[in-house]
Length: 289
Ligand code: 0GY
Image (cartoon, rainbow, N blue to C red):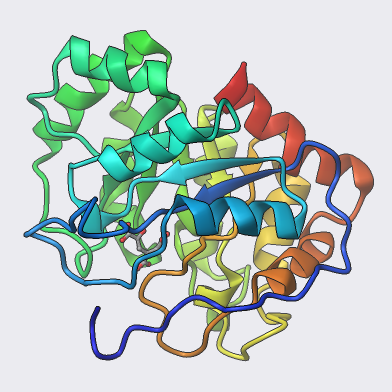
């Protein structure tokens, strides 16, 4: 692993917040373990091993029932670790894959059978080399008849340029980490207002209200981040998802305690009705219907 890699928390606290029955951790990853599942030659980072057994133990410790495992860029387009985790979970995990435009219908069908329900388009330059928009449009066209959706990862300053392209995509879109706002600018800043307007005007766009540990400047318990996800949950309660982001790739400031992250949830989804939608109803509708 990279010299400056921060390994996930060895013993997260048991959360004080009791998750509703059937709660879904809708954003997490598996890394390897290598050498069984080698990392991709084109990767931009080399993580620690963080395999499915660890992930499922964390799920049980925190009180989640299910996982959505998102293909991490360190595995490139080799989805085998994620697919293996989905198969092992016996219906309790779904997956999001990374694929090329040469993906065949048979390959999509095989992943679908394993539990994959979407693809991820990544626009974060430190994680991937740029992909031509035509490639993404070809992939979108191939996956849409399977009822799959598209997860998009970009940073706030890219949204203005990306917006016309996002509007061309034909499926549900799920934006990772609210498009990574700069929390020092506040929710009223034009950048975050642009993101809220995008959701307002496009009913197919959902948001993961995730990653206070990445967005914070103040550190745990991440109170400086609260207004951002709280606003999104208040305005779009039927189009939000929550996840741990375990094993927290590329964290540099600190190692997050996943139990502290779970205790953040009631600060951003303040009623039991919002919590039920965020943690159970929305992910079940998108991934298990
Ligand atoms: C995240 C965030 C990051 C990494 C990846 O696939 C990945 O490598 O998503 C990041 O470095 O911000 O959502 O896991």
